[in-house]
Length: 320
Ligand SMILES: *[C@@H]1O[C@H](CO)[C@@H](O)[C@H](O)[C@H]1NC(C)=O
Image 1 (cartoon, rainbow, N blue to C red):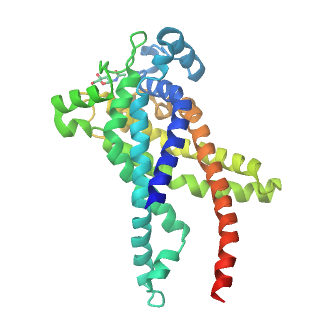
Image 2 (cartoon, rainbow, N blue to C red):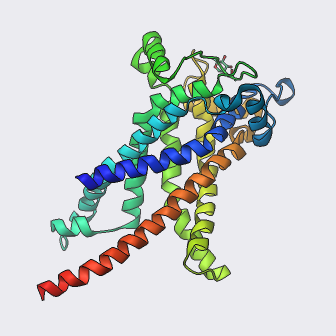
Image 3 (tube, rainbow, N blue to C red):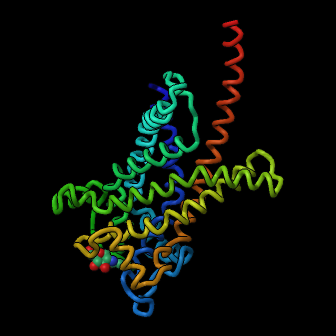
């Protein structure tokens, strides 16, 4: 029990730390994604010309406060996501394992269900708990997006003048009810589902390739390179639904009927590359985040194995 709470706090603090460092890029990403929405290229002024320009302009005109708008919402979202991942992962893994195992009558003991470590099942459970977390955290992400797109200097998107996170939630609830708070929940779930399901497979794939073709050896350099590859792929698959999500979060009326409608109309008016608006800003946010989480996981796993290696033989010896 205490270890679950312990890892919830440890994981949450680590995630919030990473979020603090990369939040500025997230702000620029959202403004780039909303810029020129449903306008052809020649009609739309480019207020923000890219990641570097965006960070500079926002910092000069709105200060650090401008870059960090919505940070508290980002924290709440991270804690929600992290909590759901921890809370749902193991129960999901166990129930899928028992489904898989009960098909073959050879393995029906409970210990088997617990001990089976199947990569596809683990990936599925990770992705599914991420999707549940994204659904639970969507209202915070919504308010965060609206706080981040608010700018007294170079506004893009609907300007919702929320005083803070709580005020934003209250205003949305008053005007539109629970439905308003869950605006954009579908692309939010798709986005996180895409990201979580490719993260680990691409990590292991990159690692094997780097060992085989570049002769790299197990160690921090290999972990860094493999997690960078994984972060890049995560960003590539996650960005299109992320753009749709930002646009669904921005709208207050019914500009788009559904996420699919948003995707189709975006591509039709702005061209197929429009779904990749803000990609480099997203990459600047995701790369450090992925590298930190995956490389850290390797280190903690190594420490765990070391500890187990020291404790287990003694226990086995006691039995003998
Ligand atoms: C944001 O949403 C509003 C509707 O609430 C819409 O009119 C506008 O085009 C959207 N996008 C931008 C960039 O303002």
